[in-house]
Length: 82
Image: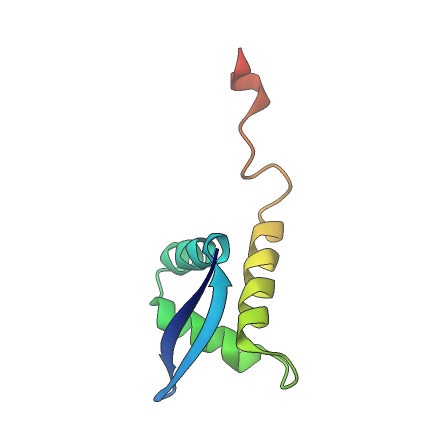
């Protein structure tokens, strides 16, 4: 489900829409890096191309993070099946 979220970036309030799965993964990335969520969002915002929107930049960041973990990082170990 798509939900609106808000954050203060460099002293300005902004909003963006993300599906729950992207929001949860963004929070997990923030926790893993031990940085506040607002700081992570600000970093992504600062690095995004001028012609892209924040919601898209956040999704791309999450996708890149998940892909960098490797193809089997979230899959259960097949040797544990039996």
